[in-house]
Image (cartoon, rainbow, N blue to C red; front, side, top):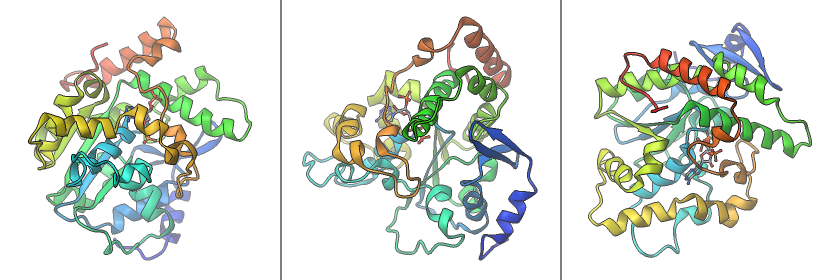
Length: 316
Ligand code: PAP
């Protein structure tokens, strides 16, 4: 179905199950929860977006380290991204969100049928929609998909901080941690249920490894050189020298990005979110500063149950 205006999608959205997620509404579309202001764009993209064979898609649930890859993938794809001269590095002037624009939060948010013909190839996009809700041509064309995930405990903590930072900007009280945690464990979370999101891409990546490259934030933190080399090979842009890998990693490092003027003071034009909120601690195990033993046990148990037999785990 190709649709020329948003009314069809708003009508459909109005018929979907809806719950409160702190101060926002989430709608259940195709088995996953979506924020109301993201969903019509996701529906429009599913109906109208046409993938090209050389497109690259970065996919993830929220707060799994996507911003790191939003910087790394464009830098790998940019012929100048691994060269010594940093003066024309796009990251100096653009938040990583701009280098891999979102389908549902960007192009298709304002226009259900945007003209993307001006985009140079290879086009780089990102999306938080689950595998099942991707536009059909993304699944069937030869375009490549990179998926990144993260230990659900750290993912949850990161998203809790992010939401509170947005609310804090407006001088409101934070979301009680326990309430947010219960909601996450119940699968009620933007782009949730988290585990189902991960499993959708994981299973497809096993079936079609040449199509979907599955990454873990923890692996990136442990062996960034090794992980980025593998990623570059998957993208068809292998590195020739170790220094090139180091250059890409340095350009995309949290410390560098966090301190760039554009990221300290800029605002995401599509989301109205301050760029600085995408860069926080960037560590593995931040959950230890927030979880009780009981919380850890319950979420680990849920993860083990959900992932049982899939071959996937986060090494608790
Ligand atoms: P998104 O879903 O809004 O795109 P996403 O980038 O996936 O957010 O997640 C943000 C997390 O990635 C933050 O983690 P934290 O809250 O635990 O600190 C953020 O700090 C981390 N992050 C952002 N950029 C980088 C980077 N260059 N290197 C490592 N981690 C990063």
